[in-house]
Length: 229
Image 1 (cartoon, rainbow, N blue to C red):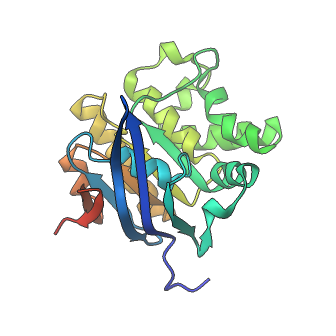
Image 2 (image 1 turned 30 degrees about the horizontal axis):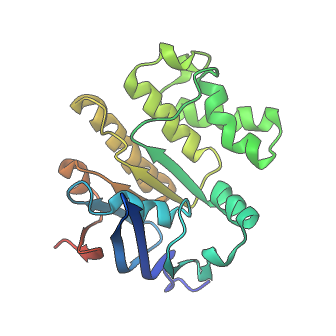
Image 3 (image 1 turned 90 degrees about the vertical axis):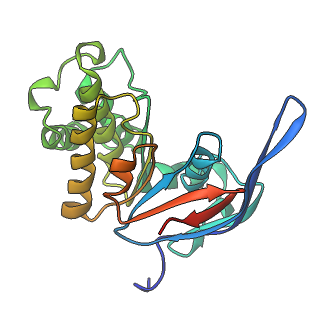
């Protein structure tokens, strides 16, 4: 792969929804490129399509038209099984609501993507423990989700997203429900992952303090991606 090729290229992507019988065009010919090692913020008012764009980037939703290329390959040319495998092995997701499974402890939650991939329980445990320790959760591995603070739960969610060492992290309001001090901890963690591991990230956020720390900011206007100078 040429180093001059973007990690992700979005070409003329359109996406609409029908609500109460009315069609709403959310993405209208979105074009953008995301490069290896970039930290990109998508900001803007609620309802402009930020989360929809993130879901399309993460192959959670198919566009109505247009293409998304990952390292030059059109990922929406894959069938559902191929797409699920690609998503599991290549992309890490973090959402505003951590979506941890309450019946499992922190370690077991972080192991899930590796187990889904077919990694042995022993290896999955090693991978999950390693990243949780790095998240500062060494003493919380066996704690149930309900025994963790909001910030700890979100760190477990970040660890889960990173257990398979994905090439790109997609985060949707990752600190939206956290207090300022805890948010800052998560922000520092994301920046260290970029600095130390070279992880690429696209982060939807209303937090301009976080957005300004990232390498590039963009918004959506009339369904199109627009850079913020």
